[in-house]
Length: 244
Image (cartoon, rainbow, N blue to C red; front, top):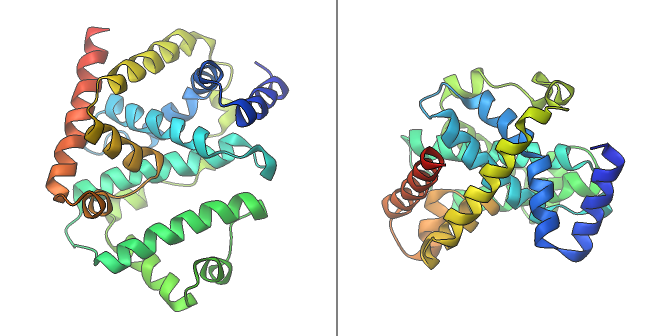
């Protein structure tokens, strides 16, 4: 499908929030989830699990996307999906516990960076982020450094920017269309069967890109509980995929 038609569909979805239109857009952009999953495959998590994580994050990115900012959906969605996948690895490999105040600050900074990127159509500066969050620049830098210290060095060392894999190399892959439709339908069936608590974790984890610790604090449960719920959901996706 040509880019102009896709952009028109995105504009229509921003206005109508039509579910069938959303499903078609998710199918069209599933190659983005595959791209993100491939970049992180081979690091202790199965590719199919990573693809499912990125695919749910894709839906979340589509829900948050605004056509009024003039930024391409792929440009907006890929960093968002990458952030969700990085959070997943971070929570699996974390050896140092981030103080709650720093964690809350990181969430505020992440949201501000995403919003400013759309508004400015470029990466915001530390000063701009600080002003948006009502923080000192030193506080922003401290939060960024704290986050980076919790990510395995080997993970960051092997992952480049999204330009490492040209989107053009992934376009026009019609042979994946039916697989992507099947994956989308499978995801929706599994999500429909989740409990209210599981759906809440799913929304905060993959749509709002929040960490397990942050979710646990809001829900009043342990991080281990959130981790168990996440593993259970992935297990359901994996089981449904194996039976498809």
